[in-house]
Length: 256
Length: 256
Image 1 (tube, rainbow over the protein chains, first blue to last red):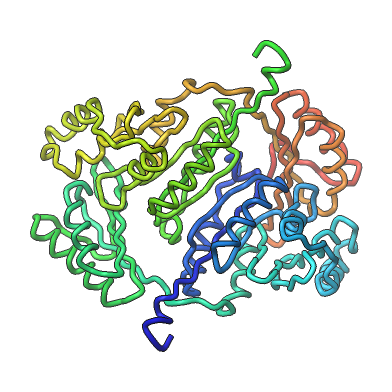
Image 2 (cartoon, chains in turn cyan, green; image 1 turned 180 degrees about the vertical axis):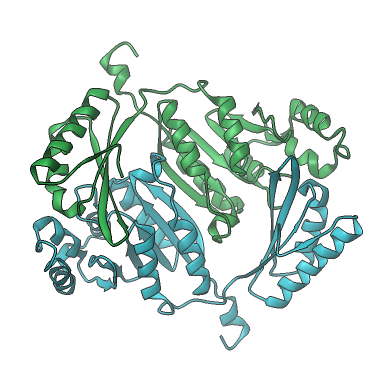
């Protein structure tokens, strides 16, 4: 990050969440927020998310589209030992590579299962990777995540996906992280729509989101300012705060 | 639903979640699970989900792709009064129709804001709809949802989106709802991968998902059987239960 040019390069990632359990409503996804937060720390923006079923074609199509237009692609789900775990096969097929047993993954699983009944065929499925892939460490369950170029294949269980992200921290090239600050107010957002629009317009590189809520019969909203430049964030927060006061409202620093 | 042919027709929906706040990790989405659960009660399957930023092109592309291959398209987010609420404009542009003020929405907002400071320009934004659209009632905040053919434009605030779904209940044509039952066990899923695979194979129309978890240092899993036929669901649950017992495990009805 030495000149304005390198500062302007925005690194993006897509996340593909794979699993019938999300689409059926059975499981509340937690990986989108987790991956988004982690990516931001790496200076990478989560640009889009898709959720697809445990289906070879649906996974393949999404991998093609998302990989083509983002710097990184993350997937969660479908890398366990059971018949509905088809992520590795689907990605390998989409990329036209074969599926192989990774020797290090096999060794890790052999170690993990040595005292847990041994390495069965089903368990060995978790050592299968697209040809050419590296492993992402998983301290918890023996089954590793998988890295294939700019594709990162993570577990679906949020805690394990989180450990895999930890193992990847500070490994990926990114840009400036997006900073954000929040200011809240017991005000209908419609009341200060002009203030928000004008503040965003007046501060290049800022992005202002308005998130209303309804609590105990009252309406309020939080206003989130995002920018890669800390001064811009502070200036926008100050402008919104002053604007609220001028309109007779009481701003709440850091939001409600 | 009078013959086997009509029973086999599967109705699908896609959900498009619109909002920077989901992609930044600030807000944990709750609409995917809510819409999925509601759709299933209507006999409609949630086939895919996308999350995109508050961006005209991203919304437009997703609307085109998702509308083309699903019976219904739902969107959440971006229909409020502030500058970052661009869902109506993006969908109208994507479909090549103009944006108009809906007279009923205007009247509803006039009524709602009569005692709340009057209908300002910003508030009138919430009466803007793609030309030809109908309204979806919103008892809570005066700002209606929007129906345009098979596209349903809902609020982002989960509670309000839920009220809009309620207003749509039993209005949409659907097929047989997917039934599901769960059976759990303190067993590594890799231990019974064959049992699950064979049970699914032996019962046409069944779909079995395996969802492992780690609690207090122990591993377990829940197995979810889905089918439109209640007998098939019961038979699969029985087969998994018997298989677990034969292997020396204790199945837990309705899951752990």
